[in-house]
Amino acid sequence: MERIKKNFGFGCMRLPMKDGEVDIPQTCQMVDAFLEAGFNYFDTAHGYLGGKSELALKECLTSRHPRESYILTDKLTNFFFKKEEDIRPFFENQLKWCGVEYFDFYLMHAQGAENFKFFKECRAYETAFALKEEGKVRHVGISFHDKAEVLEQILTEYPEIEVVQIQYNYVDYDDPAVESRKCYEVCRKFGKPVIVMEPVKGGNLVNLPENAKAVFEELGGGSPASYAIRFAAGFEGIRMVLSGMSSLEQMEDNLSYMKEFRPLDEREMEAVGKVQEIFRGMHLIPCTACRYCEAGCPKQIKIPDLFAVMNTKQIYHDWNADYYYNVVHTAEGRKASDCVKCGKCEKACPQHLKIRELLEDVAKEFEKK
Image (tube, rainbow, N blue to C red):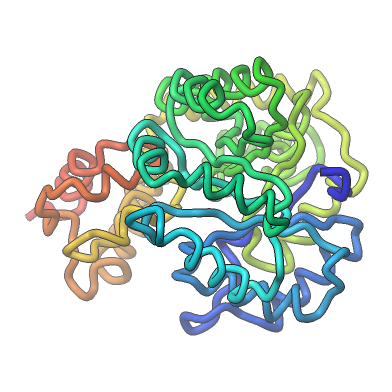
């Protein structure tokens, strides 16, 4: 892990898009700016952008920069294998898609009680450790979405795990559904370095409600993202904070405060506490727009988009959310009321949301007669 230069990483789940494809010129600019600023950690997975994230990294990073100049993390995701024998061929394809001969980190993706059971049955951990022995992987870790007791079980059964990636932000910190703080404490107990994902909660901590935005504006400088990312990066044992940047502008903003990182001071932490209280009082849907729920939906409902407009309605109480619901996100059908209650979305949701019930709430709000 000594080659990691700084505690800020480029999450490649939300790359800039243009006409349904990754905006390659802009992504190249972002990669170059990131490396030039002295950072070198890139994170991807095959499911990101429907397989386009890995290919974009090959075009924008690995074919343009020396292998020793960057750290590349990829993941083994349950959607892409059914048995032990499927794992190695999939892994070899990932190397090819990314244009590399080895991964610096290879993570068992989205681990939780059910996924962990499946990975164990397929000997996925054992396969990953063997790949490390062969030099095709430098470090084996997990990305995790579940309760702290499940994380403790995994780290007890597989002490060889070297790093843990958890969702960690100031809204989820004490959320009983996510248990960010408790999961962090388990990592500390087992002496595992922590990689943070979703520090801005899928953009929810960037596009703040007006009263929350005003709290940070009183501090006299800094974007909402800066307080969220610096909050996550300020804890002991946090090795890396990932940001899923979608534009060069977002990249430049993030780099401006992470190049010379300093943790939040007492006044800034008080402001974060005020914003936490505002969010708790709004009862928003805690969706991070990872879109895992969409993959298996038989009705192809754009679930994260419908949840986003529901939150927008809650925050701003204006007509704009209704417009986006009716004209943009459900123009081709696929309304919230089209849900057939199959439950595939809930099995895939890292946030463990009761999606079927929430879609009923969305339908009641936007499909009034």
